[in-house]
Length: 391
Image (cartoon, rainbow, N blue to C red):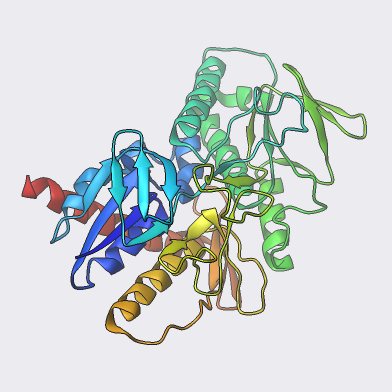
């Protein structure tokens, strides 16, 4: 049996297993330090309260047992990779492999040069941090309902995809809360800031303008070209000298790959992503692949692709197909992935999208995004239900 080990139960890891389970004579093992798959693309709704935990996390053990043959799930974390001997050292055991897929994803990158940032802000890459921020947000709404007159400013630092979606959904929810806490919602402001000269940097002007207009209609204050110098208990201190008072802050300004366990011989970029060859393999090892956010993945022109769920799944599908070709003795083709488009949720039943070069906005985008998300979620949930029935 060909022993394939996948480290990481995110979008890429799960998609790799879904494809590899169809390959004959393979034995699959999934390793993750958490017992759940975290649907991070839906975190904006969870924080604001429009989605609940059952729409954000899925049990990995039940999911793995839903396959025939079953996929072994190990809840543990990797201490060390021994690539020469094809062995992983975990905290509780050692596992040997014939092929290894590293799919550990990334965490929020709190730049060390911004004093006080990590201590005074929340990230969204981990479920517990998203949970803590949600609790803080809803506690604030409760205090307003009880008549608290103190002004509140919620800061979202980082105006990329995650930051824009979180700011928009919270602002939309505050408008809904007007029915219960009335005028007190005017005492809560949301500020979205970024060091770039625009929100959603790098995206098409249509998406940027549509998102900015929607955020402004929702009452979100946008501050661009704003470099945070340091953060204390009360203020964000910008490099230009401006001080922004805040009540609490969420930081979505960047990522750092979860790759501390790999050997020093594995080359990384400045944010810890593993360098891979044209076949998404670690240089010098044709049986070790890296996919998703943990890897620096490029398109055919050599441009680095964004760390999105879409690219994680495409890289997983490619690696699974490559392993199957190797088993059959067929020639391999280099990875040629690209972004087919994206959906951006902008609060309530509204969004903007770019799909295969076409751009849309409005309520239709919201429903299309919901359909895509529902199909993905139901596919996972049905597998979990099958796993529990087997027991």
